[in-house]
Image (cartoon, rainbow, N blue to C red; front, side, top):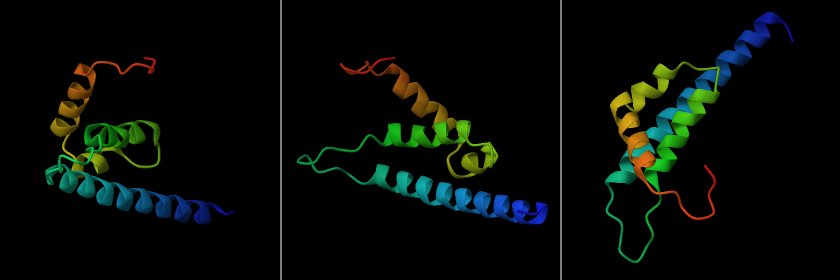
Length: 94
């Protein structure tokens, strides 16, 4: 692959990741606002949102500000704080 081809491929990957983050964060924010029926178990939206944070820690192709444009830093910080306060479930290792 030529240098120009590699640059174009990197740009395509970055665009795809950015689109993924926009769609995922918008979906998470909307789903958190929908009341859950008592007969169904609510998904762990905080943990799912935290996954996006971890994704950005591991991903070197796109800058963190892409995530913070969709999910503000204060919201991410509050979610991490909430998750850290939870007791560890039996069977999980820290």
